[in-house]
Length: 322
Length: 261
Image 1 (cartoon, rainbow over the protein chains, first blue to last red):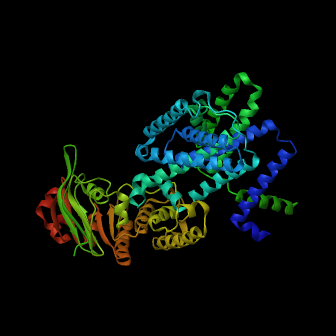
Image 2: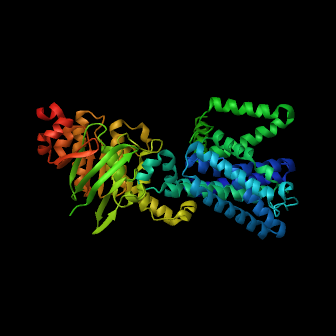
Image 3: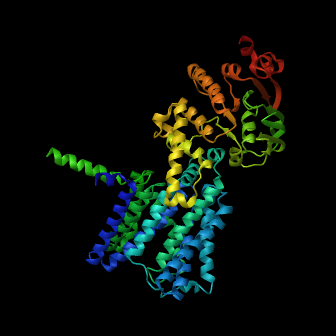
């Protein structure tokens, strides 16, 4: 057993299966009610959005305000497919087609805009998301401002888990690969990275496309969780919401993004008992957190599974002493 | 047969000619110095050679494996892939990354696994990463940085940051190494240590080296040939002894110090 524990892949697998089973049990025993399941879906979708935006903004250092645009492409693509093919294969096709469409747009938009830096890039991506929104608002097939309704619901905890865990795993693997390190070097010092043989444009576009792909998945899950989508859901504020999660969790920290997505959902749910001052309290909390942790909850660090190992050791040594 | 030829290279920023009509040539295995007063255009020459600036006119040609490679107009990462590596005057390490990651990033162009292997950590990922780590450790060992591999680059003492920058440049597997003021901010003991190190890596890695330096003790000691720039123009070229006694150079730059030396 001890030796098994040392292998990181096995540790990871155990942690994943455990978290799946625990939540599944909570759902079966109705401790997580139908209402809380909606929150659960929101959390998972926000995690995917935040982790993928973190890849673009935190890891590669490209300030993007257009994440809701990519999300909407995934959502509409998936909704349109699922409305015609209301089956599980149709759902999976919808998710991947949505993600692929978002990635394609990400790549096409990224090539010219990623030449811009900092605030200029932010404005360009903001403009891109608005253009996408206006296109959906005016297309006939997307039913304009009225949006698409009656989208069959396919998303349950199983699919949420598969896609959320999948996104987290794939992105954290990417960061620890040579391609991921190339992205990080672009954030650290673009001139030096270029001089060390890193094709900076290629890796910026790669991160942008990859991030857009994952945002497309999040959008597809959104459409198939909540029955209804309209262009207004994917406005500027949605992009800001995602950015808030990323900054709050810590730029560059994947586990920070996950933590922040969960925390904000919990805060927002708890605050629902005070509807009048909900947004005021929410904003106040954000300000307080940013005042005391300007680098975000996790800074650029990651929670690793070793933390649990260390906690275990601590516990064991305490016991022995007793 | 030269390894690098610069022909009538010019660069103007608006009305200012930062570099005008500079021609140079480097022989394989040479250690050449590039000196000149502040603002003479030395770093601009480096930036032109590495593609950070595009020349206004003139050509830069690299001769490698019997091929002629025109470098003007190429992107920095392409020039690096062709075998020119550099360090920066004001150290440009990846400050918030570990020592080993700084070197690993520079080895990226030799990494054989693709995007999919990277995101799914397929067997080729593990194999290549292991080889990469071993190669990095070898290099860090040479610079006596191996015990600090997990330290953040920003936490290294100044001298070690300079060393790490040279190690990072070597990790790109260059044939020509450009050092921009490697001894800046070092005390005499560190400088003499660095002088030995530069000579040693030239032999070990079979390099041609072009270096910018203000510390004349270093330049006169190790450079076989020296080019002198002033106001963007090459005013002299020759061995250290010739440069020391060149009237124009003394006027422009060396002044009394050279006569004393």
